[in-house]
Length: 291
Ligand code: HSE
Image (cartoon, rainbow, N blue to C red; front, top):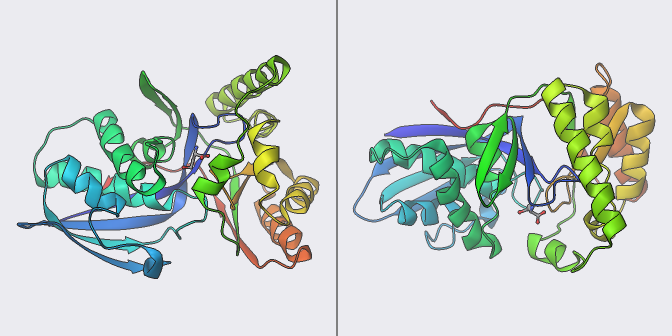
């Protein structure tokens, strides 16, 4: 029997739509696997009522199928589904690492990112790896079709989860199909700034590099309270804030020592729009770990 912990993650970071991701140091899912004739799934914990235990519709079940590794899979959810914090990716990542070990498949962590992305495809219709990459590798990750890069980083973060639901499918439908050259230039500038900031552990550069003017404004319209939450967070000491993944969560980067104020400000912003929210402090975390 093998248990693996895989963390919550935040994809996009504004300027890196479908490319950037970061592992958070909490919360996390724990997945325990045990060899079996056929795959069965048991889910408990945060939002488990909304997670299918049919192996063909559960990210961890699809991973077992991809690895030809039938197992009884017990998923303890720490990452709430539909939050924008890579809930399905955490389960897929933990299952991929655990089943690779259980069946001694010998795949590298980079290869497991591709396997776990197939699990993501089963629930979202698209094989995004920008959550599973940080969930497996940890740190700040850059995903491209020719490979994945991961680098450790250390910047103060706050994640805020409003009590509203935005499906990834809906959030992808509002993404504009074409982009003006000036917007591409602006986005490249932001993405480069953010990457430099992660390498230097510089929260000012990371926050500045989150700015993005194509996908984020289109999606922000789906999240009541978002504009106030971001503006209050910046007044309270965030260097930048943006939608976490496809939302509705918000990820803020903070000046050192300002996380508590930023967390309160994000919650206030949503509460002013009549939406309950909770926020927690985090840092850049490690990837999936065998327990
Ligand atoms: N990059 C993806 C998106 C993450 O923003 O749609 C959610 O799967």
